[in-house]
Amino acid sequence: METEATTARGWREWHDAEQPLRIGVSACLLGQEVRFDGGHKRDRFVTDILGPFVEWVPVCPEVEVGMPIPRPSIRMVSSELGERLVCPKSGEDFTEAMQAYSLQKIEQLKLLGLDGYVFKRGSPSCGMERIPVYRNGTPLHKNGRGLYAGILQDQMTSLPVEEEGRLNDPPLRENFIERVLCNNRWRVARKRGLSRGRLVQFHQAHKLLLRTHDEGGYRRLGTLVGSAGTIPDEELYERYGEEFQSCLRIKPTVKRHTNVLQHAMGYFKNLLDSQEKRELLTSIEDYRLGLIPLIVPLTLLRFNMRRHKVEYLLDQIYFDPHPKELMLRNHC
Ligand code: SF4
Image (cartoon, protein in one colour):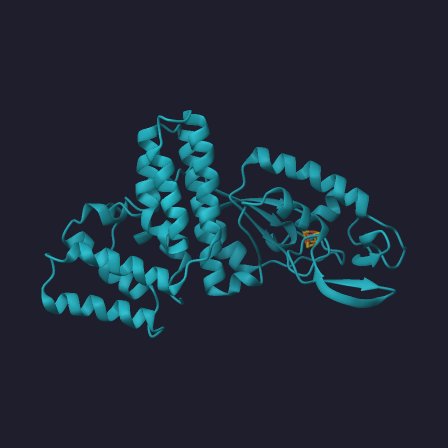
């Protein structure tokens, strides 16, 4: 059984109870009754599973821009002036007000330091994508973005964002939470105060995780860390943070996970007998073929890492990246 002591090197070492995951969220997903009909859209994954680990920053752009509760519904409308946020009942156009509000709000959010954002799907204000756009009262297409959500995504390009509906998809959920946790670790590292040595440790701890996202990005980060001393430290940290986030934007694949698992297996060349090696190889191959979830070869590797005290692997966030209560890696 895993104990706190045996896993303390994973995500725990790099997080800080004083700096919890800070995630922006459409306020109605938390159960706040701010919707046009006076109701809410409480999402159980958001509140019950993610909630205990998160300091939410709830935002209802429609209420904050001055709309009442309840209120007539609004929609995105295509016109000669471009896409507008309009109340079809009254004809009132909220586009300029929402744009001005969004820019101001986003500046506040940048100062706050968010690790991610969960939007309410389908909303003409908060929806991330696939928002219906109307012309002359009839649907024209479904490729719109909510006005506030679109501006936020354009202004905070490296912020991990998702919609509550997409978080029901295990790979999307896994990727979103992993990026949120990575952002938080970087934010905590910066807050605690970086040094060149600490940057090397941070990079070392994330090596295998980064390789599941983007080998090229992982190598560029390694080169950057190796150039410490040739560029000013603050510039080094800024560039590392940007490259780190852009590397994480690329989604992990089964092939890259398999490569990383096989690489990790190389550390047991002289430590396992032939039957143990066969067992490990079979679980990696079964994962590659989609027969078992990632958690199976990972658990086997973790067991052997601890048994044989393989220090390099024990330091890798990849093997203990998030609280197990989030139940990630069980389905993909
Ligand atoms: S979707 Fe956004 S704008 Fe609409 S009620 Fe929820 S938080 Fe408010």
